[in-house]
Image 1 (cartoon, rainbow, N blue to C red):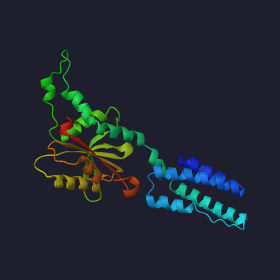
Image 2: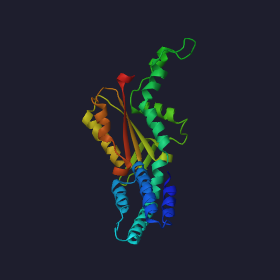
Image 3: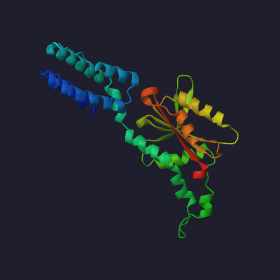
Image 4: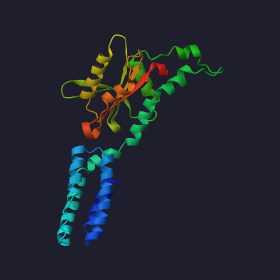
Length: 255
């Protein structure tokens, strides 16, 4: 349910004068609000504050006092939802598009295999020796391939975008302004250790001001021994950390 619909429904509840009916309807409405909060990017502490506002005092000796307390709680929750309406809208805007990009990053190896590794048709002019000569040598090659895949779907995509982080300039490999998304491409190499790679990525994750940051790492050297743990160490959530950070790893064994 959209946030504006929830707010409107909450306002309409204020017109109910029967205590039992309002309690029933209010309970159902609060359930919808909790679900919406869990799906949103609203910070956890604010979510908890809104949930606390849902509580009202029931006076077993006076239905009138209970009704007054209930309506005060209802009004308080509605006002809180109105204050957070922008963040509620952010939770749905662009999510399908971001999931599509994540799917492309997860399955990039399938494109690479199909394009460069599978035996070409014997009548085609793209011969195996030509295709096999195309390799991911470094992150610039990876960036070029990924950009070429995404561009037909997201025509406003840009490369090498500079921004000011308040201290010095930061260059985003790939940037999609529509969804405030930075995609940073990296390739492992023998000249750096896994610890150094972690430090590089950690610095980038800290300095980028975008709301969504995706790291796409091509592990050419087999440096990353535990990909799932590596991904988890960088995972950040918007509502907890103020930005979304996700890691995607392409290992040479997948190619």
